[in-house]
Amino acid sequence: MNSNAVVNAPALWRHMLIDQAPDAHKYQHGSVLVWSGPPLATGAARLAATAALRAGAGLVTLAGETAALMVHAAHVTAIMLKRADGPAGLATLLEDSRYNAVILGPAIGVGAHTCELVAVAMAARRACVLDADALTSFAGKARQLADLIAVNGYPVVLTPHDGEFQKLMGAQLEQSDVGGDQAAWRMDRASEAAAFFGATLVLKGSRTIIAATDGRLAVNDNAPPWLATAGSGDVLSGIIGGMLAQGMPGFEAACAGVWLHGLAGQIAGRGMIADDLALAVSKAVARLHGDPALLG
Image 1 (cartoon, rainbow, N blue to C red):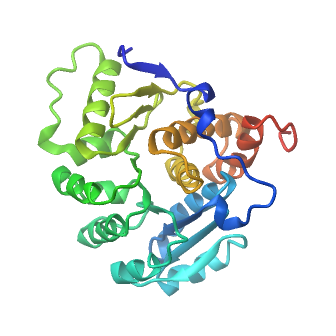
Image 2 (spheres, rainbow, N blue to C red; image 1 turned 30 degrees about the vertical axis):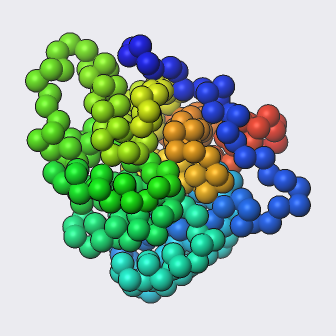
């Protein structure tokens, strides 16, 4: 293990959890905006939104085109729906300062349109999780993404798996020095990328690596193998977004999110699907806070 790396555990970030005051209202627990994919690709954003709400955000909103929202409306009750057409619509929504965290990426499509959405979120200066299509849209354009992040000033968390990471970094990522120590290589590259982007980097895998911009590294070891299922990463994005909305710094929010994701997988059990995982987030949070209820 890299000499800077530690095992990800609550002792690393528990002190940054935000206590929920008995007289607090929902906006004091944070408000997350999740951008939706088109009508036939709404599930990923819905998983992220559900996880963000169950992670403790006071309010979560799914935003996107009307046809997509009609699909969401058949599935959600506690999650808000807001029509927004393209980057201009996102910019209008983010004029409301109560949206203090944004999740972009899950199944929203790859291309210039998504790059524009990311640019809008960065210019609006919000805590942000960039995942999936929001990363692949910048394949080979890492410097462009880093420049956009630099104008934000709020925590940004990038959550690629190895394939997305290599597409994003392109020619900047050389594998000739991997040798026999793949784990050490992943830690070194994650740390370099976090510094390059000025963002917390979550390099997903069986042992997910969380890298801070200041060189801190954490390696997660509580994830069961059945987390390798479609939609699992969308749930992770949602948990991290929920933690950011509650005011946690980027590195601590990412570490907490990855650890809770692993615990939720343990609770959901072998044979789970991502829907089960999203539902188990509440139980994972309860266990983290020492609440024995709802842990059956």
